[in-house]
Length: 146
Image (tube, rainbow, N blue to C red):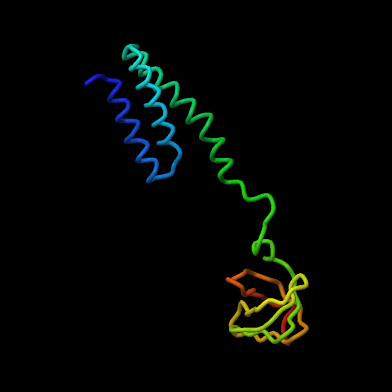
């Protein structure tokens, strides 16, 4: 079996391993093995194949991987949808307990429940939205309750 076929088998194996690990490293090594296989398929010797693998691996791991990881870790520029509501202030319109209640949030009525199940938040109290659970805002009072 020619060496270039072994490079292609290694590329497929590394690609499959990358699909399971999602490390970005194995995928780049799979590309390097593919390049080495192509170099071997066009008739170049073992030294050229190994050199192609080493250079492609180094370029991928030292240049491409850090750039890709940086892009993957960036949060969205602006929160949207319900994520944009977390941290907003609202006013209780109907008493909020650990199970139910109503608030006015950005001009809209929302069902709500208290973050602390023991809290009973009366109407008129300002609250902060801690999270959105489905169509229910989970809130916490801004000031201490009486």
